[in-house]
Image (tube, rainbow, N blue to C red; front, side, top):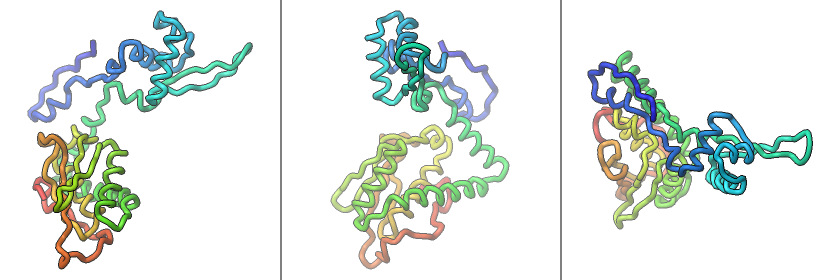
Length: 257
């Protein structure tokens, strides 16, 4: 059973949600593999023989579980020289495995944004979001380089998926929709929906001045996915697909572009 966090007086409903019990995902691995992961967390590293003894099962069965964890990127092996006989392999957790255990990163991130707003007002928050917009634009601009719009969208969707957003492009005949079925900053975006608006502004910059980008749905506001419509501008408005260098952003971070 997970430990309970002490009750704290909160006036903000969002703050109350942030002290909720964090969830462990380890048990989704199955009983035996979860036991391997938890044991390695406790002892740092162990051999197959040591893990088998702890689990009370054969070394053959233990190795099967460890191999599956290795294939999924949750453990990694290290070869250790022995005083006698052949070198032995010990196993330890990867960073990916440690992400299975309860984390409170989102709560801290939301608190930081609350602090910025409290100390520096809405303009302070806008300054941070502009800074983040510039950084995200620079990152994706190095990846999204194709001439054709559908290829640029595919490049952007691939980069977003690599960052945990599970993005795909849908062609609706007149334009495109960029769908993100996972939000890597979901808990933060729920408290600060302006993050979603600045993300859409990032897409607009990266995709170029020959398209119009509009945020239609967000997971943070209850949508089934985050959806942006991406529409080619009429030829009379198309200046170039060169990336814009202006500081375009939502006029108010609390508004929908």
